[in-house]
Image 1 (cartoon, rainbow, N blue to C red):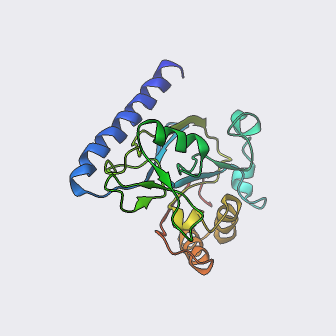
Image 2: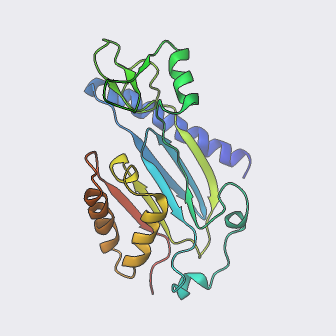
Length: 219
């Protein structure tokens, strides 16, 4: 806790800035979400509209995890609840994010026929629907600085940690993601596949990727 947690956050922030520098020569940006587990402490850092979802309960039939008491921060505070979002989408539709873009000279606009605003390219042609990413320096106001959440203290009751791209999170709610993983256990290999199929069936037309960490395996 304390200083050690601050050091972890600082290291994650530096890693994102270095990643941004490494991505710039490629002339293409990337949204990113990263999970770091140190003992029982979980940190999540993100830039863009990828998402991290923590299922703190699992299914009521999971006797092997329900036998464990919940972590204290699962009962109260910002990490409380059965299904918890550990990231937020960085998009210009968020008023606070849009203000950050315009404060440094960026421009937010909406194309005809679209409802989601974009951050303009420095050339004035085109734009992106995110306000944070690695390697997107050609879009003034899009920054690589991550949101960092944690530490989240995990216990034997926590079930799954899921990292998904916006193609999944735009179509499936956090609760739906958790339910799919609960329904497909104890066959973990079916969980991510079922989730991606559900997103595609719901009309996903963007990046559709998922990584699932089963924190407590079926015996």
